[in-house]
Image 1 (cartoon, rainbow, N blue to C red):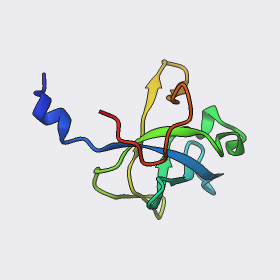
Image 2: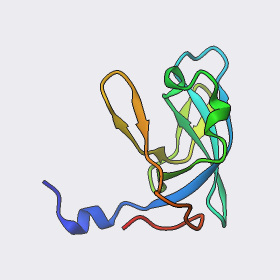
Image 3: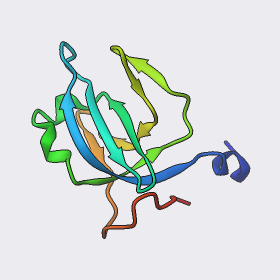
Length: 107
């Protein structure tokens, strides 16, 4: 269990995918660039097996955990974490019901 104060430490914002591509020589890794309105960030995500054509993700809005320590994956820096549902045999991406302003904070 965590407290509400622990949860409040998470900075989750809505961003829009502006580019998505496979990482060479990596079966599961995609390189996504998100627009958050005031900034862009590169997010590395292990969802490539579920999106053989990553271009289908371009233009989609998704929540991203912003205040996670940057991490290098296959030589690329990941500057956050995409939020998704683990449905066992596939990843289900989260999207807002309607388009929201880029950078909107999830509370």
